[in-house]
Length: 319
Ligand code: SF4
Image (cartoon, rainbow, N blue to C red):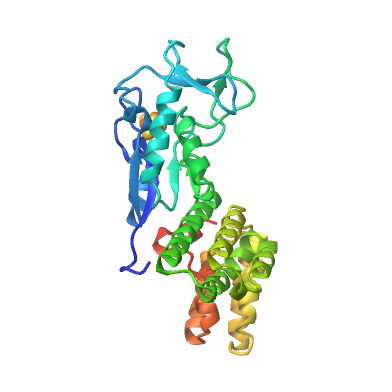
């Protein structure tokens, strides 16, 4: 990341930063967040339960009723209902979160859980259908394109890499909008994301390109909004080993007149070994970058696929 660039603001459940705010007085410190991602992200810590005045420690709460719009009540005392307080807190809080480029939540919480949070019926049994924490629901409803993830799911290297790629893309877009969006900049941005899109969702590169075909004749802000929605939705789809291999081969094609026979063979071998799961993605990508360093190509050098985020996050060493 350019050192002059603003650091990336990412929302986070406070207990993941090691803050002792859980109902039992503990925390759920995530070293992935504080040690690794914290080098590039400025975390905006929110504990909604403390925010509504529940103390630490406190009696646990849980979701009950309709999984699509559950109530949050005391686990031991169903008469304690904090649903409205949590919703009011969330609606007030999200107004301060306009600068966020991502949000990391914690699994299973009736306030902060993002996916598959248990919802109980009035007899006290978990229902088959699960829900979303009440605070997390307000955040995701308010910012539907914001990259969001749970720390539990981020143990999966592919999901982790996908989330960070989306956060950086979201941030790059916000920077572009702040600088002032023009049709030219929009097309340039799209061209920079060509191979990232091709890896995540091949059809979307074509569809989004078509959308921008007569960008100069359209209202650039309305067009930008539609484009950004398409971009973020496309990036939510995970890149596969197969689609990444396809991109690597496309990039290799740009070097066909430059590399020696031996170099071509080595690069081809690295791509094949990646395809077969023998080596991680970072190996052929580093080799390609090194060749493009020797044989510069402006169009390729700008491609976000070759460097979607700083290398020292080491995310491509594991996929
Ligand atoms: S409300 Fe959210 S931030 Fe607070 S302790 Fe529970 S999970 Fe952590």
